[in-house]
Image (tube, rainbow, N blue to C red):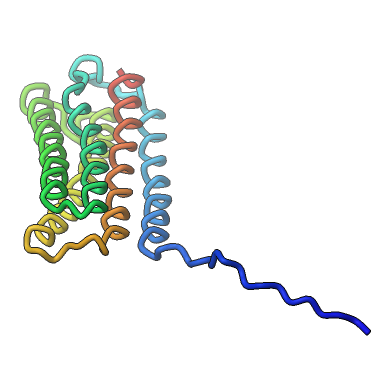
Length: 197
């Protein structure tokens, strides 16, 4: 006669991952592929412009701009922690500071482009450098703008009292996008302003 052993159910139930996070990782993967294409194109065309200006002649290291953008990754983490602690005032402050740092970065990029266009005569159609530079840096700036719009919407919800700690997963998912934008800037900064000069 055989005995049948019955196992007790596991105390740890497995749950599907949060759909928003899975979607964001999928988006980040796809966007990484797009950025890789633009970065490879920029690297491929370094030094191939037949006419000036060249990167060495017109580009300056945007150190301060970089510090502002990378600091926004810290402020968004602080905002996430405040939301978990249910400290909505602190959340609004840190989240608003993240938006401010992103806006300062965009203004710095706009100021750089204004100088490049009006003083240095570099446009997207000037030479290969201009084409690849504006394409790559512009693609990143577009992602910053999209991120800032989403961050602003969350801040509006929070200030109006519609954001609660139960929305932590959604806020963390958006923060992943923002960290991605910051990480991409490290690559863009290195390729365009360090290697490409």
